[in-house]
Length: 114
Length: 112
Image (tube, rainbow over all chains, first blue to last red; front, side):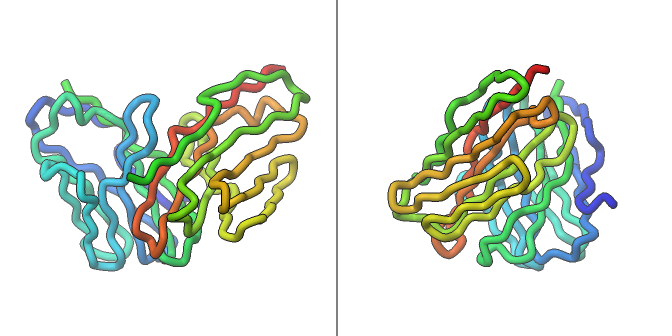
């Protein structure tokens, strides 16, 4: 029944060592989102894909990249993780961002940077 | 800068109590508002999609209202149960999908 799957649930990496988080969906939704949530803060949108079109938020650091090889999968790459990048990373999908409908979330990946 | 405020940050109620919390947003840039429930170790789950001023939505013991002119939405839980313990998030979708901003959430704890 899982609709948005994130792997791994917990990821530990070292300072500066590239890491990739993955997200897959069985909903066939057009839009996929990546959020970063630090402790006691609001989830912050990093970027989203509308089909193959990549949309980066203005304040997302260059250290964060994303790939969407097909409808089902989307990856978050952190090229050189810093201690400040330790957070929960949430993936979400929606049919159409402009339609105003809700998002469907994965359970998140908690990233620890040592 | 679009800002979404939720209050209170947290609250603790007894089983059977009714409670409510608030999501505030700039009314000038409203397109849609969503409420989510996020239980520990689970995925955030959508509760309501609200788009029209005066909207009232209900799902079981949980309901929500929307006032776009004054920029707020209330979430009500009637007769809270321990299984209602979760963080309740709201997010605002700005005009024409220009922005998607979450509040920090309200964490509800219900004691039996």
